Amino acid sequence: MYPEELKERPKRLLENPDAEPSMYIADIANAFGRMIIADFPEESVSEGYRRMFRTLCVRDGLTQVELARAAGLTSPSVSSALNKMETDGLVKRVPDAKDRRKVYVFITEKGRELDKEIIGRCIGLEKVMLQGISDEERETLMSILHRMLCNLLEEEEA
Image 1: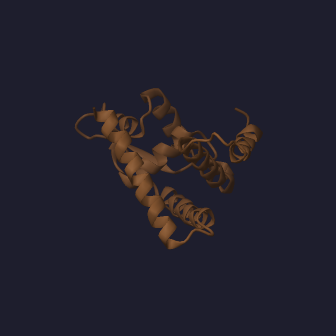
Image 2: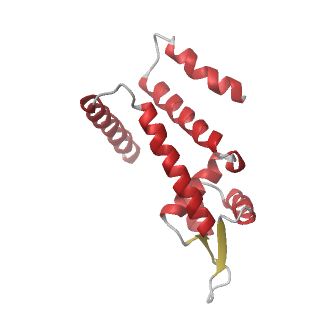
Image 3: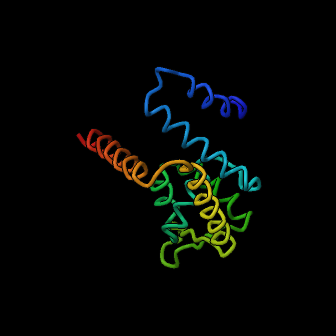
């Protein structure tokens, strides 16, 4: 799908009387992601890259295999993205001293700074997204979303 079409799809959804909650959830998540990327054009790369970066910011020092599993990506795509992240100065790879086949990935100081910027932008976008929504409505929304996620997780485990 082309970038312009990605921007137009949510507008069409607003006019769709048969829209389902999942459609809104997907379009909200996509719009949120596009807006985050728009502020960081030099980091505007694949979804997988962003998932890996965020995973490492939360769980620093994973092996490449652990990172692939945690981010839900294949090893080749992890290796390729790590090369770019390393070139960008966002991560460093450190081979295990005892087992050279294992390589641990750590976020650099530059990576931590970028993460702080991204988190700040996310907080700002959350405020924009929730404009005109009361605290009570927000609590109701959070309760509904929580239940929806629980339902899906229960179904997945069944």
